[in-house]
Length: 245
Image (spheres, rainbow, N blue to C red):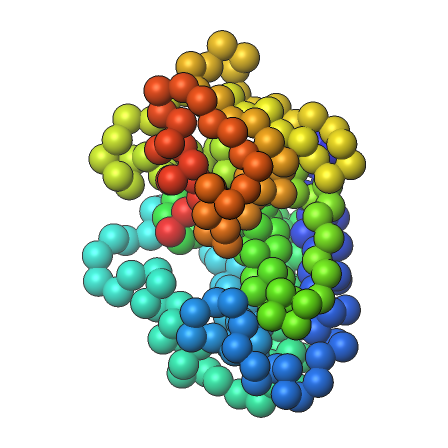
């Protein structure tokens, strides 16, 4: 798998989630998801709002970092969901249109231009990777409560790459110097995925699915098969995140 396939993989992940949501009844749409305080409809509304933001972001030339201070990203997300709640059928239609528009916009955008996003300007391929990570994580939120299987796929390679790539940012938020980290992960198909130099003093091994779930804050490191060794091992697993906000 190469990073060149990110747009196709984002589209495939969205199609999978759409197919799952199509099968939910009215009661399920109003049932609690694993996202604290949100039902399934709220989660899908959040995805619709952020996919719409992708389209509007790519339509503007600004590469400036988003201003800090004031309302946090999490607070803004929660407020937008509260203010724009609607019938599940309308929310679903809104998201289906939004994700398709977002994929088209990402494909057509200048691949070398950075666009302002939550924490830092991103090129379209990296922005698409963050969208894949978010759709996958929220896919877990809306399937696990109903016992619906969301099988790991090799699309997780993008998310694992993002988790490793974001470690310096995660350490920086804690005021800590970022260590050099090597990750040797096993993908769903049995492939070996590696990130970071071989001689890194701290390294992580284990299933890619576990690595991505820890980075999405959907499971605690101690409840996985991940093994981290080296001087920064505990901090790497504690701070690992597949997002920048």
